[in-house]
Amino acid sequence: MAFRSEGDAKAWERGRGGYPGAIVPVEVLGKLSRDWYGGRLDDAWRPYSATAKQGLLQDAGLRGAFWKLV
Image 1 (cartoon, rainbow, N blue to C red):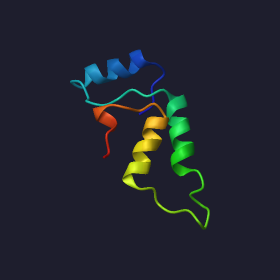
Image 2 (cartoon, one colour):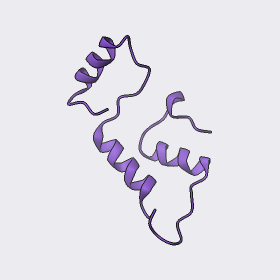
Image 3 (cartoon, helix red, strand yellow):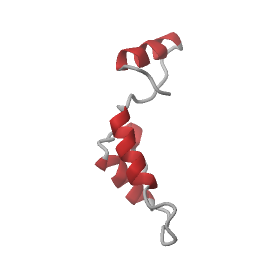
């Protein structure tokens, strides 16, 4: 879901009994998506390992238990 502000996201969460998730700025999502999907159409592309995916999340600043894959 996309929201205009963190306050709007929190208000949406409160209105639904508190959704356990994360609020991520669109700039961070942009970086993650460029890194995650970049080169996907190249013939040489291969799926990332779970460890490599964890590294992409960390490189985007997404750390902590919520973002733990491995």
